[in-house]
Image (cartoon, rainbow over all chains, first blue to last red; front, side):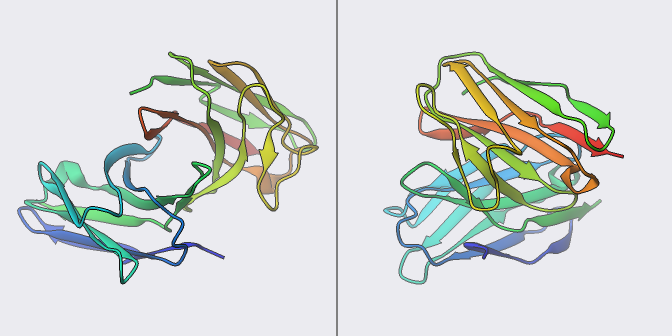
Length: 111
Length: 112
């Protein structure tokens, strides 16, 4: 069974708009939550990550919001650009450093 | 960060044959992992390959099908044995460096 649930499966946003991707988990032992960006034919690239003792982390146009009590976290892409068009995966790491991935969200930014 | 090189980057193989994928890291790392990404799907962990110990496999993956070697702290191989079309996937190695997980570019395998 999938330990990390991700939605939506895909989204289309206009250039300059905000993209929001949501993830939820059940395993309270997870203690590190990264987001990866993947372009076709490439490996996943670490985008931004957060630990559960922090409620929000921002790096440039990318922000993670984390709600520990609800076991949910989300990625916000501000001022979306056509170069942001990619597949985004949320993930959660357990004590053995194994990552469980969400199903992925394909983001398309229209110029 | 870490620079991870995988070889081959892609291959087309006949069913029933085996392919060995290499993963080379530019620094010494303890923890290395192998993932599979089936077409249009997410990533699934195959096994953990820590140097100095036997690889540990996730549910649904067995050593006879996916033997792994980890001879030193910068290198590992994953073999996909007795391949069938269902093994067509991208295979990725991953390492932990500085508290972060990094991935190689992947090996795109097509079994015909």
